[in-house]
Length: 116
Length: 116
Image 1 (spheres, rainbow over the protein chains, first blue to last red):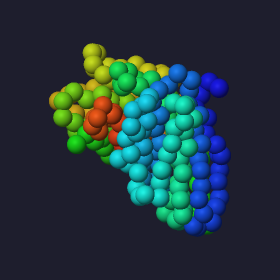
Image 2: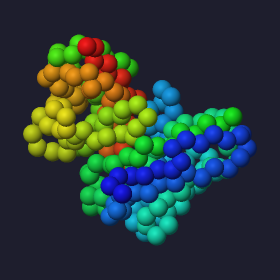
Image 3: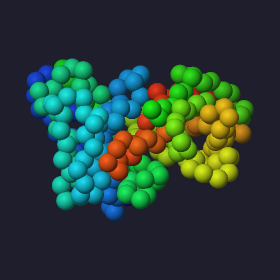
Image 4: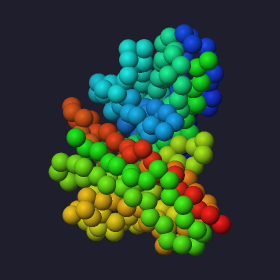
């Protein structure tokens, strides 16, 4: 597609369950980012993938959070044993990376996660 | 540490009047600054960026921003506001997080309401 695609758009789950969120970046974009947007908290960086390099995981809030990027394209963010404080909108973005590090990021519409 | 601040949580302006959304930054070295807009239930959309060159940067939808080094500001402006400009606006600064990884640090956002 033309833009960054995220699925599902909404996810409601019970506390303690695992969830997987998917991101399909723009074709040709080597950089992929995950952010968390909580009400009144702005955007919180979670993790960054650039090509085949080791990901920058410095923003992951706990070891319950992990992410993969397969084949340099689609990424999955996994949250294990979800807690109510994990409720937020999870945004994915992609950009031309590497030496194009000043290029803008293109965002998907996010997954709204609600933990009951 | 690189950071941005958006001092106003909300800005109200009458349709047809000029609008300003404020952003100040704190960086070491030359700043790379960005503005994004977020409409309800959507991801962020890139408006404009300042890397180097002219202090007045023109972007999408008639927006512009003025880079002021002495005041460490990067305010977003538009000469004549439209009701459709009502949205959440984020200022961001690029920061280096090590090992060749660049991230964006976002402000907390300013809600712009344009009143008909």
